Amino acid sequence: MEAILAVLTDQPVIICNGFPSREAFKLADRPTHFYMIGSMGVAPAIALGVALSKPNKKVVVFDGDGNVLMGMGTLATVGALKPPNFVHVVFDNEVYGSTGNQPTLSRIVRLEQVAKAAGYVNVEQVREREDLVYEFKDMLAKDGPSFLLVKVTEQAEDVDRVLLEPPEVTQRFKKAIESP
Image 1: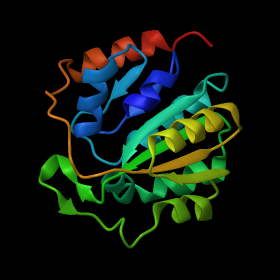
Image 2: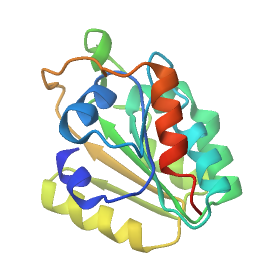
Image 3: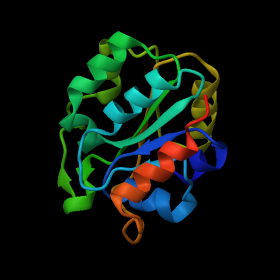
Image 4: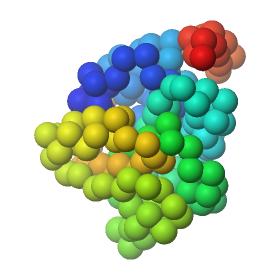
């Protein structure tokens, strides 16, 4: 996540609940970050709304395998609507890391294949940091929707909770992205 955050500037980033939001908040809190707090599986749906309403901005989603599995219908909606400014990054550790590392089904359900079948235009899977940065930069430059599956270990950073209340996250995010 740190490698991708270093590439980003002012793009809206919607980050799924749990450890991904907590880690992004610790590494690089920005007003353009929308942290999901307590709602699982809906980050890409929110990002889709932002991408459709802000067609001149590249919109990025940080998601987890458990979140994607919980909201699979959104993949089909994104694939059908084909927003060219949509980049979906999924950190796949094959467990529900925020609740005790229970296994997800991503070992069996190949999320990158599901995204491709749903209609995502650019789909890649990476394991190494160099490949991650290369593919992410490439997806930022291309029309999408794009789906980048990042295989990661189940180790989680020791991070505190997001120190903003949901209404505060919402208001500062809306203000940060209000220009076209």
